[in-house]
Amino acid sequence: MADQDLMRQRPAALLPTVCDAFCDFATLPRRCTAWPLAEGHSGGGTHASLRDVQQSLKTAATHGRWQWPGRPIVFLSDPHADAEGFLRSLAAAGTIRRIGPRPADFALTRFGWQAQIVVGGDCLDKGPSNLDMLDALAALLASGADVHLLAGNHDLRFMLAVQALTGPRSTLSEHLFVRMGRKTVPLLREVWDRFPTADLMHDLPDEATCRARIFPSKKWARAFPDRAAAHLSTSAIGKELRRLRSKQGQFDTEVAKAGMTMRMVYAAALMCRDLFLAPGGAYAWFYDRMEMIQRSGSLLFVHAGLDDAMCALLAAGGPDAVNARFRHEARRDPFAFYFGPVANLVRTKYRETDKHLTDAGVRCLHAKGIKMVVQGHVNNHHGQRLLAKRGLLHLEGDVTLDRASRRLEGLSGIGAGATLIHPSGDIIGLSADFPQAKHFHPEHSAIGRLPA
Image (cartoon, rainbow, N blue to C red; front, top):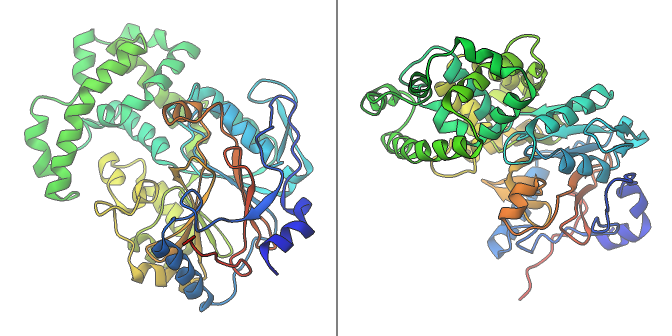
């Protein structure tokens, strides 16, 4: 059956009912169209990219039929500290009904009780309030919804920055707070303002000593290359040195912009260690609940992507093996973890400098019945995109929700959108930045041709 015939026959079954009296959803699409794979905003936009999608689907088909979840899945990703964008997206997907203006003022809809919600990572950084975003996520977890929380690179950077500053100092880790902490300075300020962080100042040394603890030592640049050689190539080591030089000035700028001293920054980091990393901390649940991957049938949900090593581990032990390795490594050695294959799952963009996904890794996934990756990490301005990357079908589900990114990239207002995956195999890309909901079914959709 052609896509447009399907749209005419059962649009109500594919699009959710929206219940939100606190948001104007005038730009949210209420009609479906066949996924415009030939267009650059929704696919690759070239003849080669379209052929790659066709070949990926053809290859996947040789490994049996697609397996679909037993109930709907709602995927939304990269809310980036914008609770309102997060809540609007949940409402746009039909999972919640807003009953007030605060982050926890909502109730699950009937569809929200039925669906599985996958949050694809990057809850932190960029937006107006990290803590409001975490409060909204906590309320969703407390509502009884079936929620799977995936790690994002920004989430892990914050964790590793706090570990590096408040844990044992070493040549490999002493630069990581400045290297990774610039974008989290607003979160440190929020923690300072909301929690009794000032009480910690009594036991801290003076400003100069705190600065010396936060920044790498003068000997670091000479000692780092030898120590890092076991983890990074020579070119990657040089890149890390250059990056740190540029980020030192940026860090000072962000701290001054936040109206903080280095003593305040250090005190806030200590408070974050207690809040996020200590057992029983107010936000310890955030990292305790976090996973690297989630699988449902033929679909694999991950923040960024894969490499051959993770494909092999996934094939040997399934998602539990990958998530167990994440929990085992994440809080041991911050540097080795961040530049290793597990953290590559949240960092890769399949660049030459990333861990490599080859035909062997893709064959490994296909042999285990995994046919498509659903990811965040790569933000788009016109809703979701479908691409073949390294021979494997990928759905990019980051639709630029947070208002900070939108302002910088020329998008208006606050974003709203989600990807809905139905048990029938129908996939719906919903975004307030595209006039129609995009529909795709890997086994039924006709792959269009590029315009001449």
